[in-house]
Length: 315
Image 1: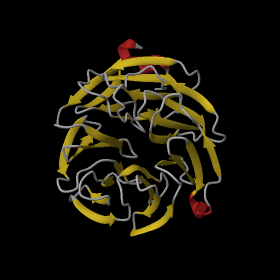
Image 2: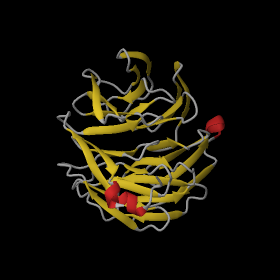
Image 3: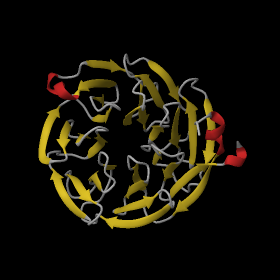
Image 4: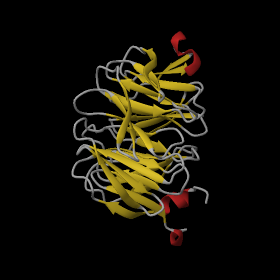
């Protein structure tokens, strides 16, 4: 099924789970789309089976807390995650036996960005210590460090050759992974009309667009090659300055974001027009939102975890 405006408008909530007592910080799908994982402020890591649409296991990180979480490249049984208690170490966890494989130490302040390479065991992390660190899952040692001169959010491109850093909520710097020590090969500034912090950065799957999430009720898509502004989207509720996560659909044709009133807003990346506002009956702000990389479903989360499917009768 192709994702069209009418398919987007037909999405309905099919499952809602109330496993968490506090807000869900992050949701990630495994690369094969068969599993999802969530992290939350109540120190829970919950694994979901997408075919059954059910939670299948809960792990705990009581000592360290759990903030950002990512499946590793091409592996549904291991994750890396950042902590929100005790220290700023990134932990590499086996989901099969709930044991740590490795610790990645180096950051001296909260990790605010975590991005896995789509092609190998490399990942990058951005921190409030104003550094981006490059890691390899096979080694505890940092493989590289760059100081982009400000608080960085960062993300790999779909080919795993380039990473982008959004610095001090005003500039995007592009680095070649193989020559990052030479500094960025491209840099473009983009400023929003409202004062806001950039909270996330993502490439579209076709590699042509970069999505900037903010805490200010506005998100923006840039041309990934020259930094020109393609579209700026607003008109969703975020009066409290919450970090709301936006995402592309896998075909790069739509951008979606949750809002503090529990609705999901969707725009066309081609026309820039809003195509849908979907009501997920979330009791609180939708902090995190992810579209499945393989299947026609997406997840949105506040304290509740909600899975959506298109309603064929509405098409």
